[in-house]
Length: 151
Image 1 (tube, helix red, strand yellow):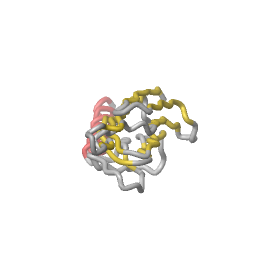
Image 2 (tube, helix red, strand yellow; image 1 turned 180 degrees about the horizontal axis):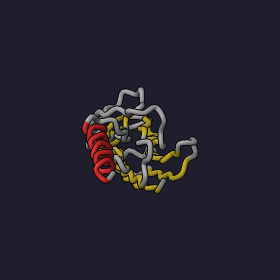
Image 3 (cartoon, rainbow, N blue to C red; image 1 turned 30 degrees about the vertical axis):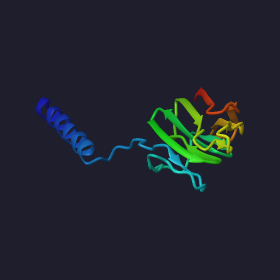
Image 4 (cartoon, one colour; image 1 turned 180 degrees about the vertical axis):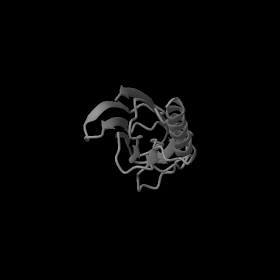
């Protein structure tokens, strides 16, 4: 009787190893993705493997900007012009964002006087239900905004 119990445990152990080796386990490997149709560009292009979202980061601006977005799936650097939206991973955890206005296109008159860019840059963290959970705005020339939220 003892041999019979050991062989059943052995078979179960082998089946468990086969399941893990064949990749029949599931894991969430979704990453942040840029879901904007604006003409801005992302310095990394990763696509989300899931249609559901744990939230998003909205950038509302009229000028250029650069930024960093970090959640549980990792971080990415983005850049663009105008308003854009970036999807977070399905379970984003702690989200931290930092964006800066691009002042390389400040107006310069014929006397060489620089007119600072005082347009606004607003960054929002939005939860999966569409509620804004954190927001920061700057109108300073080359202004920086940073905010975070724990989901």
